[in-house]
Every structure is written in C-alpha cells, then in structure tokens.
Length: 317
Image 1 (cartoon, one colour):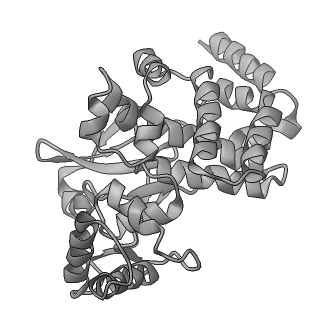
Image 2 (cartoon, rainbow, N blue to C red):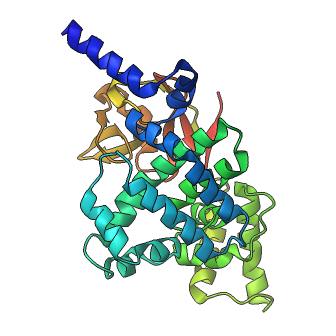
Image 3 (tube, rainbow, N blue to C red):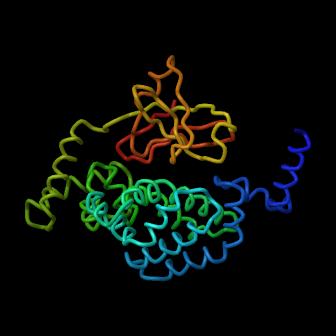
C-alpha cells in the first residue's frame, strides 16, 4: 500500500511540475488534470475574453464568447454527461437560455434541452468558468477575470448580465421580465436597497405613462412592492462550519437541500451529499433550497455562509 501511495504522489508531482506552479494549482477548485489543461490554454482564454472586452459587448458578442467557453469546456478532462454536451452543440439552447426564454419553451427545442440548462449552465459551466477566473487573477488579468466571474454568476440564472440577475434575485422571478426591466435600472449601485427602490419607482413611471413595459413586468413590479412593505424578506445568522476536505475534495460550494424530510449539504452536481445530523437539523432548516445562499470554502476544512441574494441578508455575529 505504501508503495502505491508513493507512486501516486510521484505521479501527482510530475503533473504539477515545478514548485512555482503549485500556488496556481492550489487556488483552483477543479481536478488537477483540468486545471493543468486550463494552464496550457490560458493564452487562448485570455485572448477570447479580451476580444469581448474590446467589442461593443452586445448580446451576440457575449454569446460568441460563451460559445468559445463551451467549446473549451467540452474538451476538458472533466467527467460530465456527454449526451448533455452533445445536445448543447446540436441545438440553439445557448441563446434561448441567456435570452431569458422559459424552460418550457427551451424544452421544446429537443430531448435533454432542459438538462443542458439545469445541469450544465446552472452548475457545471459556472464551476469551470469561476475556476478560470480565479486563475486569471494570478498573472494580473483582473479585467478579464471580472468578466468571467460575472458570467459564472448570471449563467446559473439564465440572463445575460449582472443587472438582470440582481433584478431576478430582488423578486422579479421571470427571467424575461428581469431582462426587460434591466434596461430601466441604473448600474451605479447594485445593492438590494437601490435595486428594489428603482424597481418600485418604475410602477409610478409606468402608471404616469413615462415608460412603456409589458403587463407581466408591471404585475411583477407590484408584487415586489407588496413584499417590500415588510422590509428585508429574510435575515440569516452568520454561520461557519467545518467539513473534512476528504469528504468534498475540490468542490468550493455546498448547498443545503431537503429530501424526504432530511437535510443535506450537496455539491452543485449532487455527486456529494452529506446528511446533516438529526440533532442539528433545526440550525440548517432555514437554509434549505434558498436561491443564492451557500457555504463557501475559506480554508481546507472551514466553510462560511454566503448570500448572493439581495433579499437575504447575513447578520454578522
């Protein structure tokens, strides 16, 4: 057994290369072979993002960048459902997903079209793109890294920009209407208060004939206004937990999910499901299924509660 472990360590060190590269490998949240593959193609990735930065950054140009990322990701040495990836390459799902089309509409595009959105664009794609973003920071490619970080965030919702994703999380639970309203919201401060305030102000502007929006968007605005009367929708206490690195490997996020009256901490792809002990379930019940709320790894075994949802505030102790 010792000889096997020694041989394995030698193989890992051979893959990792010189010690100067180890920091870059450690900061990645994906398997070693995959992160080495990213290193080998970093010039291509930086050039693809730079081309988008230098463009008009239209929807079509964003789709071109995401297509480049899709092609790159499908060639990576990472285990994933190949049938889902084949569907992605055969059907016009990309534009439909980021364009805010409903899953019902996307499903009509073909078999497994919904799985491309729920499995790939909602979890697998953001996971890889976020890892690429972190690696771009090391050589100082901060602008390129920020573009990819934003893409990894709004990809899971299925909108084409951060404003639309924040509007969606603020209560406009229609991706189509969130995109529609994004053209009327200023980008200066993307905070919970500023977005909700701007959304509520759109109601009177629409009623006074100052702006023209769809009836569906107006109804969503009214719902946001009603929910806002009670102030912040939810407050959560800050939590820091310890999870053994060997249980979760390279994964960076854990989501709290409920299944058959039991709670689990799960990875995005559900390959790892850690059952929460019965005696502490009450502590985690408030987290189950919350959109944009998860535990983020801060150190090997330490994780802290994070909220990207503008309706949910985490109170520091």
